Image (cartoon, rainbow, N blue to C red; front, side, top):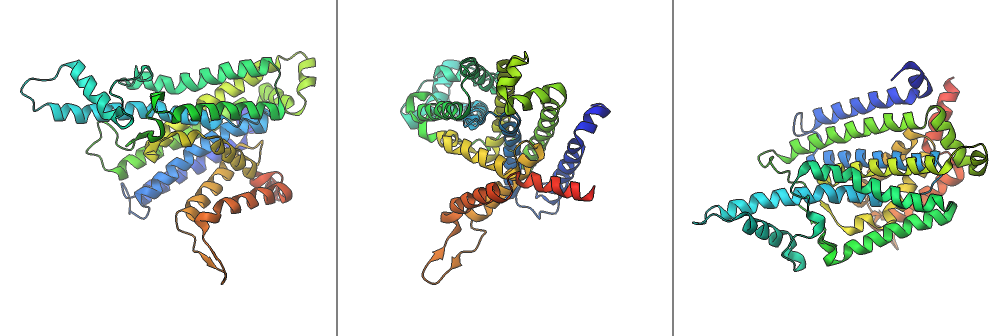
Length: 388
């Protein structure tokens, strides 16, 4: 990074410093390496929040900077989770099956071992053979490659078809939502090759780390999530800087004029759409081992709508705003739906926040839209302006 980059993006250095301090404090206060003030489950919640911040930044770039309201980016997030989940389930099941068959007088053949693993994984949906989707599930490097390739190729093909047809605005949003819904409905089927509604479970059990407590594993993933978020922030800050950033913003503000100026608008939009999809896949691959399970409901269109709400509350067109909105909403959601918020007794009716959280979120979204159209990030800008 050179000085001109930091001069154009002063938030980058501040963000990296705050992220590093946050990671250090959580590590010290965790059960794994510190005083045990923070529980392992809460450390996992914080790690998952960092992953959600990463996809929120990607959403902010594609929507807040480029003007593409994608309601399908959580599908890419889920694909990344399924890709790493396949290897986690395969490797863990392979170890269990191999140990159970090791006491036999005649050692099992490789085919018998494969059949036993397949029966163990797919017996829940009445199958006993590995689908084609699981061809590379035995290899961690290949599955890591799938985390990048599958979301990237899907976004590339979808974006090329949509952008070359010059589909924009609400029509493009509907198409991305339709893509997400189609993928979700397909995954709900038992013959999808991904265990249907059961999804992939037990992902918190990392192969080769059976003797490592979950408190330590949670810190490992917190570090990985923080590193990915920091790198993602720097990457997208670079993307939206300089000439490229100016063209992307211009496409958002007046696509037709940019096209008349001689720029190939579709190429810029396709680059942003594909890059953000790949980053969303990486975020999902880090998120679901901390969640422990992934199923088709995670890819439902409502998840992408929540993502848009986070970015809107944080403030579109500000990378740190996307982070702020995600942190506030997700941690508030954990508090209200996890039983942390006390019920409110009104006499004739008792407000239970587990039932009313979505209503509160809706009111918050409307309030921010009406009174703080630039979101939480806009408040930060006003404070900086007041100090200046």
